[in-house]
Image (cartoon, rainbow, N blue to C red; front, side, top):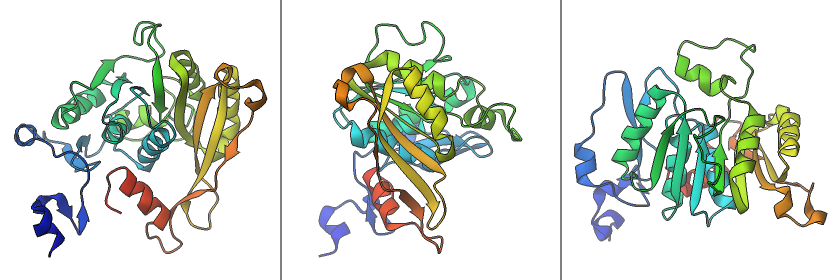
Length: 286
């Protein structure tokens, strides 16, 4: 029997791939208003995301951050996403952690507007609280708030480095206009609950900055995984999983397990089989 007919949901299939996860309600689908300059794109399973055509758009970095964090902290109940942007990391993580509640902080109102629309469409209003503000400022995250998992895809470059681009939304996502990796580590460390994990992505050739930021915030990098964008090339990105040092045995502090590199594309430019498996794990077609 044909698999699509057997399950009775032909719309669950996309190019032979069966979408996993919850089905977005018809009421949510009917409420979608795509404004000029926006696109409405698939993200995880039936979840979708609003983006600007010419602004910041979610990327492999976001997919990897959400996958890495939820893989190594799979029982998270409270999740904090720092500098959530259009909400891509938070929404992928929310798709993977259906029992978790989220706080996602973003300073750019243009990005927050898009994130709010996506949260509403994906039925996440009761689970995902979007907060406007700079996560470094007092009061944006209460001093008493604690999270099992903190996620972050920080900007990589100081404002003095390179050309900023043609859209202000892109600038804040790529350049350190509101905080550095040190700020991300400091805020994450303050708000990690017992045994909690901070997961982030950063350029592999800037591992020294991440190591210093972690040490200054009394975090231990317990896992590190280089990311190769094309087979045969040097790693360009790196995934990190950190835990507060005082949440670990003294003998374990300072130890880091370096995982084998994750390759995104083959030498021929096709999606690498391992990254296909990662995509499947976060509700993307391979």
